[in-house]
Image (cartoon, rainbow, N blue to C red; front, side):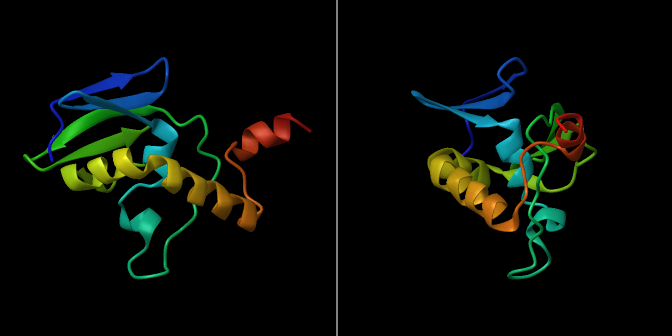
Length: 123
């Protein structure tokens, strides 16, 4: 389902998607750590790479990919993976549980949302 409207909210660091009367916000961090790219998901079942240190990631630009998806370009250099309309809708409808799963994975791995640079500064 293609959104009726898409807005980048730089101040709140999120992508706003409108479907009829519904408005959903997906944080840049969530979009980055749940990227549909092979780099993040892996090339097969169970081969995904946990993304950490992406709390402050920014979105540089959005590029259309035909009539079926968006390519998101992040300020950490990540620009692979196409966010098709179905996947974006899935993220909107399941963001709370997907986010909690991500946080649980970080905890289990002893990883952090903050970048290593920020962690070092805090020492």
